[in-house]
Image (cartoon, rainbow, N blue to C red):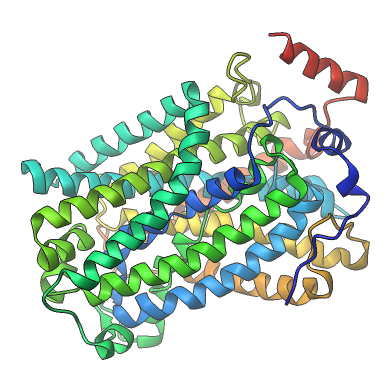
Length: 509
């Protein structure tokens, strides 16, 4: 399979001209390189976040065989989804991303397609921010427990979670240059961090598990009796990690050569994560010392490392993971706020006039940043009374994002030859790749709303379906009662002269 970067009429346009053709002024400052665009998505995927924060879940739901083999299976299917998204991104490089694509690709009822795509994207973006910073809070709490004996009560984790979210909100509001610099640095932090962790776990422990254990051992601590069902549920570890790469699309209005840099950012973030993440998971699984003890730990990787290389080594590896998770959460808030900014720019969120305001000094959507932060905090609060809340948050992120990811692909397939390709496209492979992507998303959407543990109780109930139905119900009722009368899809900001006036005003501040 090959993809094409062949020149087209669109490729000859400057970034600003293409954005004008899509109907928007250059309000956000365009300062990101193609590498920086890739770095944002790679940082949000964050193999040192998703792989490690859900490792405890994987140990209970499928065990080593699903942890190790689930990763490449899910990674390859995710690559199909990403390739299909990237092709559409090349045609429409705007911060609105998915919901803008849906509006332009739907031959009929474009506003309705756009509306629901945007709301699912909003749900997924907020949930993935919650999942990333919640995972960071778990690891910070584990480090503080090892270093200072701090407790591991749910309320303590929630307090750390709130502090991390506050830090990321402040960074995005006041330190956007730092955010860009940290995003670039985070790529090397992740790559070097994985090499250090895997290298230490290869050479330091006096005992390793056998290859048979790592590649074939199955564990079922769910209470369900179906091996097949549990094996499918165990894929959540990998599928949750492979989320957030739509950030490359949301950052296109701030990226140079966006029509090619955005698609490449999506695809390369998946490919690099697939390779590095598999090495990480295999390395951690070989280092398991006492499965029974470690599977019951609040943060299983911390206990594995402590047993394998001692407390000092475990603390150092925890700090590497925590650094990566903090980079990841920072970038997630950035991408989340851009999606909120674009969606509210088109009037789709309640209070849109508030959320799409751009700070004239920093040229960042300040209010959208804080909506992203507060929404993520609310999603994490059920952990105070539900021990499986973190798995539910990750399921919400997967379902919300992947429904939004695949709706434009479905609409692009319906367009057939009428689809106007950008400079980056899949050629004759478009239909096959797009069809595989749609089928895969249908499967995981159903799968991750199903109960994980049996018998089902208040303490282990998978409230993913509740969150999805609340958002779907709210968006549906809002559409039927009000929005269908006034929401016409993405709004253009005016004529070429009006767009130039907006940009001139911003430049003069």
